[in-house]
Length: 79
Image (tube, rainbow, N blue to C red):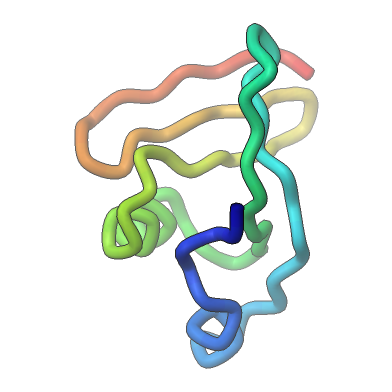
């Protein structure tokens, strides 16, 4: 399955997208996606919502956070 967000849109925003695979550590579910640097949480959530994504991921030092695009929720776990 290809990510709904066109790479051309990310590039036009001045971002440098890198292919990524998002997965659920508790199931076999995974999907192709894009990883980018340079967006704050709000920008990433708005962009994700525009393209019908339920959530976006933020990776930090030793932590992964999943942020809802349509509802105000987030879940974090240590890496």
